[in-house]
Structures are given as C-alpha cells and as structure tokens.
Image (cartoon, rainbow, N blue to C red; front, side, top):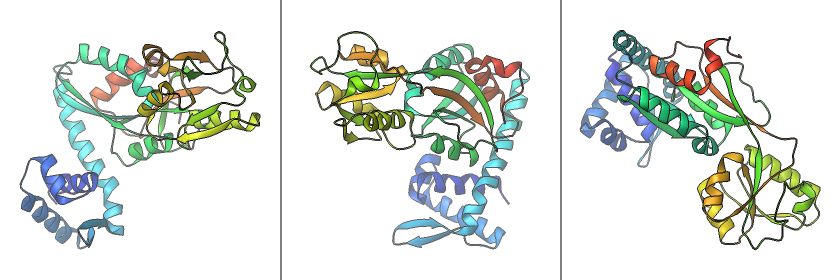
Length: 299
C-alpha cells in the first residue's frame, strides 16, 4: 500500500470529491481516480459508492479514515522529529477552534508562536461546537483542538489541557432599553429580543436560561455564524449574550457591552489524541497552556 494512496483518499474525504481533492493536491484528476482504484484493489473493498455526481463513503471507507490519518500522522511526526534535531524550523500545525476562542486567546498564542517559529505554517479549521472540535481531533483531522465548555462532555478518549476561564457579556445597541452601566442580571433582560447561537454552545445555554427566567424575553434569531451577530445587534435586531472575548470587537463597532451576572462560565480547553505530538504541536501547547509542561494532562 502506497502512502500516497492514503493521502489522496483522505483528500477526497475532506474535500468531498475527486475534482476538489485534485485541486487541493495540485495534481491531475485522473491521478486521484487511479490512486483510489489502486487502493481499493490493495484492500479488496470498495471505499466509495457514487450517487449521481456525489461520492459516498462505504462502511469500509469509513473504517479506513482513522487508520489512514494515523499513518500520515506518524509519517509527519517522523519527519518533524528529524527536523527538530536542528531546531523547530519548518513544519505544519493544524488546529481546530471554536469562533469565540478564535478571537481570544488563540490569536495572541499564534502571534507569539509565529514570532518564535516563523517557518512553521499554522492551519486553522473552524468548529462550531465542542462536539465538532472533538470529532475533528478524534478522526485525526487536526492535531490540536481548542474548545469552550460550560459542562464537560465525554473526553475519556482524549487528553485535556485547561487554558483559561471566560465569562459572558450582553451586547446591545445604544438604543436598547437597558441600564447604561454595571453588570446585568437575568431579570434585567426582561422583554428583550435575543439573538442566540446554535445548540451545544455556551452562549446558547445561557440565553436559554435567560429566556426561561423571564416571561417576555424571546429569541428572534438563531445563527451558527458568530460573525453575523454584531452586525445584527448594531442594526437593532436584538441583543446578544456572547462570550467575553467579543467585548473589544463589540465596543469597537460602537455597541454597548455589559458583564452578565451568572454562575455560568466557559472553560477553555485544548484537547488532543493519546499520541505523540509533533514538535510544533508541543511548542504551541506549551505557549497556550504552560502548565502542560509541569503536570500530567487530564484524561
């Protein structure tokens, strides 16, 4: 079995088709198709079925994803360890992060990392919920995952490193009927129209608590796109409960930001599989969670 065949297979899985995979790999489309056929012959199993113009993974194809990623991970890891003998000069690190943590604290960590290791390329993949982050980590789609949780999901099969704790804020336009100063309690949001996030997120959990605590507070918009929330608040569509990292951007946009008095908070965690990390991933982890160097990770 050729490692290149596994690389092409995963590119088709990740990109959703042969044509897109070929573009990503900078190769001709027939090369990808021939590689898939060769891999299927080697394994003696069909990896995809075609439905119209779309390829769908078979059960055998699904079963191959994790081992294939593991093989490529060990190949990359071997190369990275050899390169690290003379210092962390090259390489690529793929991480997944939820939107709020892509605002803070990840940019500051990346800035420090790039300053120390300018030749290492960082690739960031978006994940809307903790479960999305965990799925990418478990399948090997990313080496590190950054997620924010209000209640800990099942992380028994990954390594967990706490990073920081974040609170929640209420973001509103200047025309909203809210106190001008001070933290807000749930009951002070009585009668407000809320813009809420997707299920499985901390901001959605807190928004639902606020709605449950007030008779006339309602959700008017549900969105998976965090970047759409501030423009809607600015337009007067409603107010939003957001993670604290959005505070600075909201104020820069001319919005009013109040701390929210709540028992809820976000625990920011970095997770990875129970495998040896690449030198780049270890360096990033130690910048983001310095305690990782001196303690055993939480399983």
